[in-house]
Length: 347
Image 1 (spheres, one colour):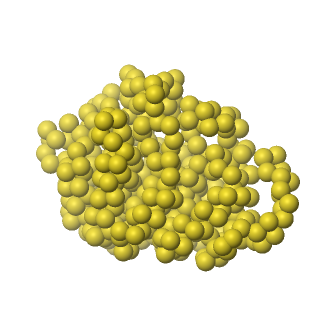
Image 2 (cartoon, rainbow, N blue to C red; image 1 turned 180 degrees about the horizontal axis):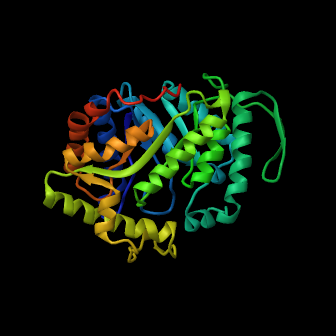
């Protein structure tokens, strides 16, 4: 099982400054590279202060310039808000400048507030995503592509420069429901998923859907990988564990507002709202724990067949604590899973 650090930009205090926030994330990426993490992961979100990264391809290039080996994943690039005729070229350039270390995770978007204000109603995002993905794949793999669809109509065109890698970087579909995971895997795509704050059974259902889809994909299923993201942090002791779970609960009070709640945002700042899940229940689901507990909790993930474990580590802890946790994960946790069902490299 490989390990990744999700560089999720959490910005609960505007006074901290975006310059400091992204400098922190770059420092985390450099440390992850030095410590042997397989990848780092970048989200894409706009006009809100959680998972806030409106330019993931630009940041991927910056990370590549400061690191040596770590792969750089988007999780996810929100295709419906982009024009594939220009995005395809931007993607090719980013793949070149990251020297082939880019992995493209794509999705439809999940937050109504964000999509509505960017002109893509959530109700249309699935249909537009499907067409956008097909257009993108055609532009990356063929020359003189023309299109006549619902969202795209254009005369023959060829994106330039041409992709260095045939078809561009590997494409991974971001999906949460078991049904979406199953159908995307069956089509031959790598999968990125997360149980969010859900319980262990939700994770098992997601993994099972991936395995079923891969088995039914035939030759297209060979080498497909499953990446699973979860809020995770190595606590120093029980008191620190309790404090970090409280921080995660505060983070989810904003996340849930947009994902399942009313979508109340004030000048870019998401309001924290009361949650249906208690902090104690959240603590049972997320991977915020001491080293021995982390090893025990990750065992079932490896046994279930998760290829890449992605730690969403930015949910309110200080930069010093975050860097320490990244180092402890590398030194005290990763060695226990070095031989467990390694992922086939998505190259």
